[in-house]
Length: 279
Ligand code: PAF
Image (cartoon, rainbow, N blue to C red):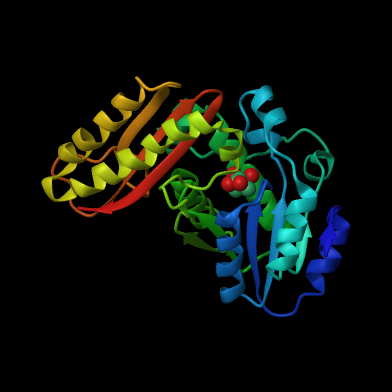
């Protein structure tokens, strides 16, 4: 069932007995989303998927306008995956008036990806908090692909006691390593070839884990440097080895979990990827 208004969502949600697993999305669903939905189906009695391109988390108007909108195809995927309710509200449904109160994600929302996209995590966390209030799920499913988003949402749920269990789902990759993303559809063939450097750099970094933090960065960086000379070139935003809970950079000699995260532009498309590592 597809619903648009908050009133219809409330009715549909009220008719769902048992537990609800929630998969918030911005649409343009791909196999990575299917995996989130499948995990939610295993864990809960019913699954609700939201499809909403949230203007609050976009810096550039052009990026917001360019974001793919494919509701009909998304609804078909949800039906095939046994989703109980697809919630596809309009901007006016979600933001009927300018917000007076919103979520601040603090320092962890301003570092790494947050430094490259000021305001992004505040806008993302604000809509996720609103969607949690609208859908009232027991659990919510997020891809490891957006590792910093996942970390911010975990803190959102804990710090504000939202009563929603946050479940991380591993990144789904193409056979050649490219992480699935709604933005991949913008890549021309040659751009896609260059974009493979992101995952290749991460895998090179992973192979150097036994040699420590500096070795991981030293192994990953040359892969990106090489791709910056390709045609079309990769333009690196960052390559960091961060604490997966705070996104602060890890110190040399670090022991325990870390996330190797990369962001780069290829042509007009900005891509991110990461690998969780254990030192
Ligand atoms: O990951 C996304 O698609 C979005 O950031 C989310 C979580 C649906 C919030 O708009």
